[in-house]
Image (cartoon, rainbow, N blue to C red; front, side, top):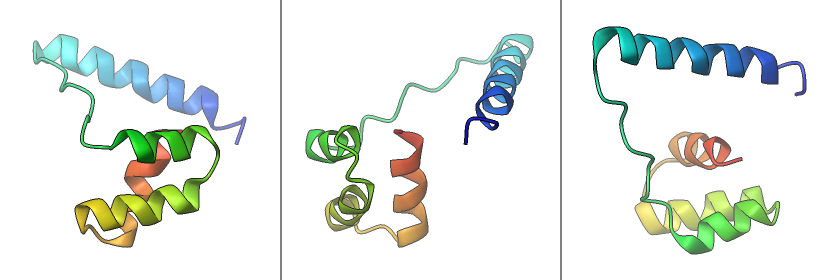
Length: 72
């Protein structure tokens, strides 16, 4: 996992550059995740967070996993 951090940082810089070059506003952070789910993620309870997020939104497992992993 630690070896991915530099790559993610590099990709984030590239995205920032693209937004700046294209003069497009970067979208606001997703605020659709409830405080309860955020607390579960912060507490390291990823699986439970995914379960609760799916119950709250009705989304599929893959989408919920992607959203929750983006919060870590």
